[in-house]
Length: 123
Image (cartoon, rainbow, N blue to C red; front, side):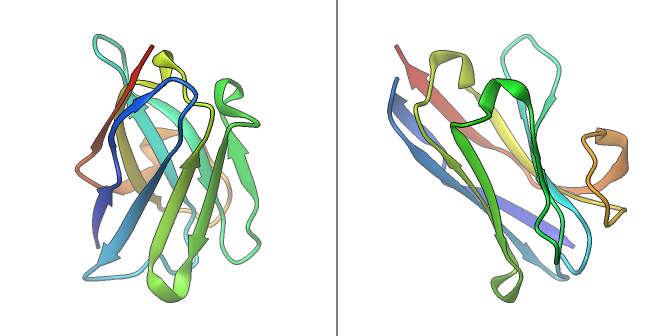
């Protein structure tokens, strides 16, 4: 499976962006998918995950109420709607597919990764 993340860019604080992650040469199937991010000088961290078909979600506390993860299996595409963006959301955002169908935030439980898309929030 190949994952392609897109939709990043430069936005002012308070603005919105929607990231997309499209799967090719394979599908999301019933596996959990998620978004992670890595800010400059920091380790990569979990942002959000979603299961299928139940659609259960999990978010890191810092984005709850601002970010929404969703998925369209028919299009093999996952989304991350990011609203009320803050400077501290600046990072490279990665999408990934888990080896499990249950919700997980552990990076070692994701075996397929996209290349990342840069999100820069100016204050």
